[in-house]
Image 1 (cartoon, chains in turn blue, cyan, purple):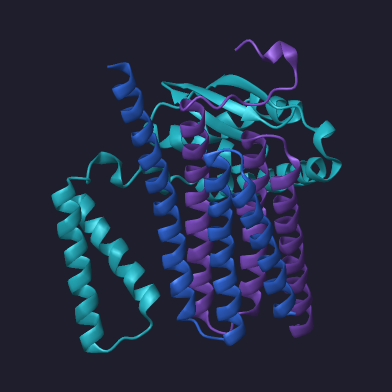
Image 2 (cartoon, each protein chain N blue to C red):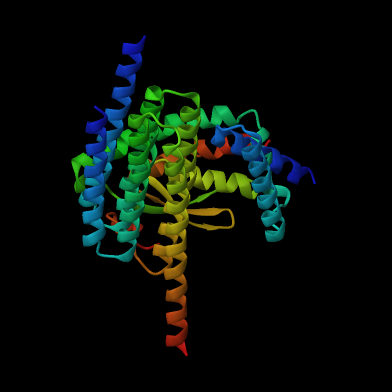
Length: 91
Length: 157
Length: 107
């Protein structure tokens, strides 16, 4: 039964990855990667409950934090890039 | 000083919950890491009046969270129906809504609550005016009634 | 009692899985970025809440339950923030939301 829920989460991740490859705009891709990150946290939690080991949930916690920070950092980077481009075009 | 004290207590409790090993060596390392984080936060100068917002103490907070979860469940069911019905079931709209909260914390809480309920997303904040994107007319009507606004304002008093 | 907990936990897990699939399908069926954001928020909120609650009912120690609660808290705290910042920077770089009603187009 844990197998079934892991497979469901993996299917969701695959669909989101296809959207990340297809995605017409940059933001579609970031959104899809964000969904994959959230599902990875859930997958690690499911695996740790299956194994019955509490210390694997720590990895899920750290992954959730890194996922959030990386999404914000990537957005910052592209916004910064964009504003610099428009600046140099304006000059 | 009061803020640093409460921060220390919060960090220590967080470490104790997450550790699970209570030997003297590890407890010492935990105390060291708490001190290190306090030093880093002091260097960042991030401790001000809002580092322990008063809404945490509010008696309405559990009631508000319960109300929010029910709201999330309702709007989830609505969005799931629209996903399976397909593109003709949605009519995206963008509209503006006023927030009546005074403090920044409550305004952030209101904006995040709007984003958290599926079907509505806060696009932009300008002073006390939120620009909201809604998936359908129903979502727009739900925000425009101001029910959520009143619930968040209750936390402030 | 044990059977009851198991049934409750599997119901939560399967409903959460179904909502996850729905969100992923929504990522495909919706026409533009802002509407896809709504579909993704389904997978981020109720699906996550249900799956983690289902796992909490199956956990074998108190420490694990507390840690799973922390995972739930972190995900529900951070996902609205990242969704908002995605929407905001998409809007600021000039992505126009797809609008069906003509009367709403002149904003």
